[in-house]
Structures are given as structure tokens and as C-alpha cells.
Image (tube, rainbow, N blue to C red; front, side):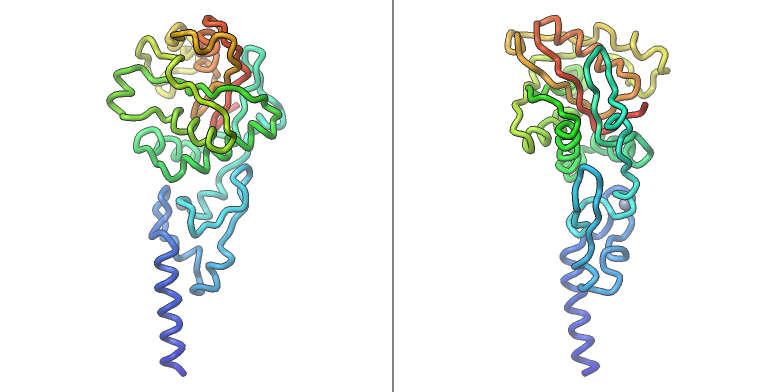
Length: 247
Ligand SMILES: [Zn+2]
């Protein structure tokens, strides 16, 4: 019986090894330690509830339970943040964990987390009573877009669209000049840094109700500059949705 028990145990571990990714894709912590402390039975209860991301099965999630637990709902959902008369909504407060996630999305795509983030944004926009409109990701300048190969805001917009059925327009709002990264610019200079940096082309946005999509909002300078560009081509901005917000 001892031999048989050992066989069952090693079979359970083999299944656990197959089901659980080796490590958290953010912090690198070994997944098996938390998801299955006692082998397969532990896996059956390996779930966690995260605001806006729902009840998640940590076995199949790119982030470990500890990282998911560090995602905090944004105050904007209760206090309501308004910029230029429009709502700015984010599911999460910007903290060290969210910054690390967004950094990975920005610089190494981190495709596996974009789906959950898009779902969180869709949930937050809906909960805030945000109206339906065309999603318009904040654009990068052409050179940066070419060098990186993707636009992080567009990845998020695609995932949000997948969950809401909203249309995306990622070609009409453009960045007309390069700017210093806002994260490296003192807050008092951020408005000047991006003022006039965006423009809109064509007539697809004329009269269209649009929702701006970005990764993080801090001072709101980028949202304000993009809104001005949208209004200049007679679009009707409804607000902005981001992953994280710092008030
Ligand atoms: Zn982790």
C-alpha cells in the first residue's frame, strides 16, 4: 500500500506540474508552493477573488496569488474623477505591483496579462455607468511604435473591445511629435510636455462618440491633450479608461 500511495502521490504531482505554470510571471515565485501545498487536492481550491478580475483560478493565471492580492481598487470608482468635464475611470490604484505589471506590458508585451487587464477595464467602465462608444487608444509617435512593434494602449483596447463588443479606432488619433516619457517628467511640466503633441486625421471620428484608452493616468495631462485633439475633429469624447490611476 505504501508503494501504491507513493505512485498516486507522484501521479498527482505530475498532474500538478502540468497544470501549474512553473512560476509567477511577475515576481517569479514558484507557483506550486502556493497553489498546491498538499498535491492535487489543493489545486482544486486554488482560486482567488480580485476586484474587476472576478473569481480567478490561480492555476491558470500568469500572476501568483500574492501579486493578485496586491491589486487595489481605484478610489476613482467611488469618488469619480473628472477631467475636462469627462470621467476618467480605472479599475486599479497605481501601486508598485501595478506599475511592475504595466512596465512589463509596455516593454515586453506581457500578452498573458493583457486579457485580464482588459476585462478589469471593461468591468470598471461598466460599473461607472460609462456610455458606449468607440475605443481610441492613446497613440505613440511613429518612430517609437515602429521600434517597439506594438502600442501598449492598443493591446489593452483590443482586450477591452473583446469583452464589450465596442469598436476600436487606432488610426485616427496620432502623435505628431515625440515627447519625453511622462513618467520621467516632473508633474508640473507634464502638461507642457504633451500639449499639442496629438492630432487627429481623416473624418472617421467626425461626430463619433469616443472613449480614450491608456495604461496609467496620473496628472491627466495626456488625457487632456488627446481630448483636445479629438474635439478638433468634432469627435465626442465620453471619457477615458485606464488600467491604473494615481490620485
Ligand atoms: Zn507573483
